[in-house]
Length: 151
Image 1 (cartoon, one colour):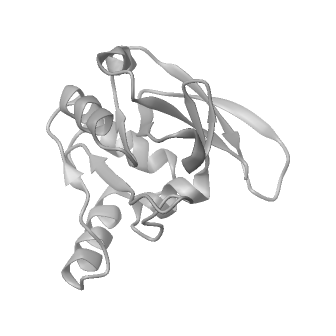
Image 2 (tube, one colour; image 1 turned 45 degrees about the horizontal axis):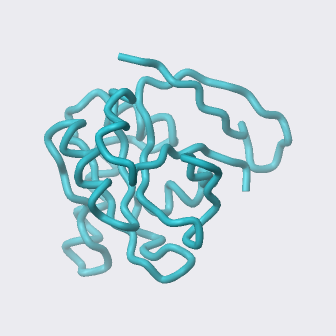
């Protein structure tokens, strides 16, 4: 397992940055015209990423539908990823189920492994997800890592 450094803003109201180690890698498959892309990195605000995961934002800026892939609820990467964003894993899955049941959102597709996550995100334009093993990113050239920004 390879730990990656992720930079993000402590608060959207403060200009103080810090670095934190995470045992997961946020991934996305988008084109430059869909969002801010620098090389092989997609830059998203924490608020935008949370909005995408919570099915509040369902389209990229250019109108392409956002497809959310998640690992199983009991997966350690799922817990770490959601908690790092300030989301309780149980509350996340309950909220998504309620939105799906009411017809307000598409339910995220649950994938069993990091490999299936990379392959599905790599084959689905506009998709986002996360993996625990960052070494798998070389399975497809279409997957970019997500870096959180303050905007």
